[in-house]
Image 1 (tube, helix red, strand yellow):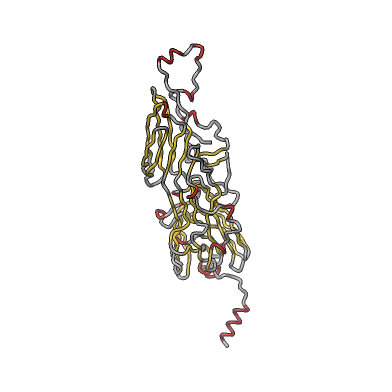
Image 2 (cartoon, one colour):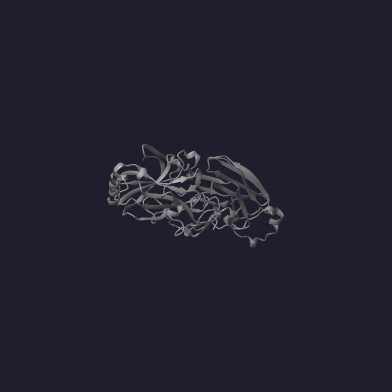
Amino acid sequence: MLLLFFMFLLLSSPVSADGFDQIYNSSFNRYKQTMGISYSYLPVSKNPSELGMSYDTSLVEGVATENVWGNYTLEYLTENDYWQRKSKLLSEVSGPPGMQIDLLYYYLNDTGHNIEVSSILLPFSRGDSSLGNWMNIAMGITGVSYRDIPISWEQLVLSRKGLMKGYVGPGQMENGVGGSFIIDSFVIKDPINIEKIEVFAEGQEIKGKIILRNFKNVDLENINVTHGSFSSTYTIPAMDTIEIEYSLESDEWEDILTISNPNFAKECILYGNSLSDWTTTDAITSLAFREDGGWVNGSYLKPEGEDFCITQIPYSVNIPLRKPQIEEDDEDIDEVEEGDDEPVSPTDSPDSNLDDLAQEDPDEEGEVLGVQVSPNEEHISNEGSSNDSIVDNIKDDNFVLPKTAVVIY
C-alpha cells in the first residue's frame, strides 16, 4: 500500500526542475553542453617550384565547418544522457600554418524549466598546461587566462583548472531550447619567423644573410634553407634566433629561397577518463554559469586518452628574391658608351636589400605565405558574441615577413 502511494506521488507530481537550482549539485544539472573543433580555411598548397607554401595534403585531417551543420549534433557527439563525450569525433584537426580552426559550442536546456546561462568557459589547456596547451600552436586568440573553477559534484568539490577563455552565454532560455554555433576562431601559427633576409653583390659574388627566429619553447631541428646552389640544415634553439650567411656565384643564382620545416607539432587539451570515473576534471569539455546555482560542467570525454588535438604538419615556403646587380669588370665598363648610361634603380643597386622588395601596397588583397588575407578582414571571435566578433587578423609577423624580407602575394 505504501509503495502504491509513492508511485501515485511520482506520477502525479509535475517535473518542474532538475534539482540543481535547489541543492546546487552539478550531478543533478541538466543543462547539457560540449564543444567541438573544425576548420574553415585551408591555405592552398602550391607546387614545390611555385611561390608560396607547399605541404602534403594527405596529412590534413579534420571536418570542414561547412560539413558540420546537420551532421554533427549534440545527440550525435554524446551518449549516456549527454554526459559522455565521444572521443575522436569532431575533436581533431591537422594542417599547415594559416589553417583557420573554428571552436564550436553545443548546448541544450533539458532542465524542465526556464534557466539563464550568463557565462561559458572553454578550456585551452590541460590542468597542467605543460601536458597540452593550444596557445603553443595557435595564434589570433585573446582573453585566455588561467582559471580554477570549483564544481560541486555529489559530496565532492571538484576543480577544473587550466588556461580557459570566457564567453557570454546563451542567456535566458526556455526548456527544450538548444543549438550550436561557432564561438571562436583562430589559426595554426608558423613557429618560424623570418627576422631578416638580405642579398647583395660583393665583387663577382652574391652574398646572402638570413635571420630566423624560433617561437617555440623547444628546439626546431632539421630546418632546411635552400637558395640556388646553397642548401644547408640547421637547428634553431628554443625561443632564439640563428643567423645564416652564404655566398653564390652569379650563375648559381635562383629567384626563389626555400625554407622547409619537416617537424610536426601537436597539442591536446583534454584527457579522457574511464567509464566509471566522473571526478577527473581534465576530461570536462566545457563549463557554464547558471544564474540559479553557479558553475556546472559539460560532458566528460571518455574513454581514457588524449583528445581535442591540433597538429601543425610539415611545410615549406618559397620566397621570391630579386638578383642584385653584379659589379662589372673594368673591360666591360670601357665598352659602355657615354650616351648609354642610365641611372641605377634602388632594386638594381649592388647594396640593395629586401627593403626594396616588400609589397608596394600592403592593403592589397592577396596571399601571404600561402595564407589568403584581405585588408581589415573580419572573422568570428571574441568574448561575448558567436557571430559578430573579430579574430586577430592573420596578417601577423608569422605570415607577413618583416619589411627587410618579402611579402608573397
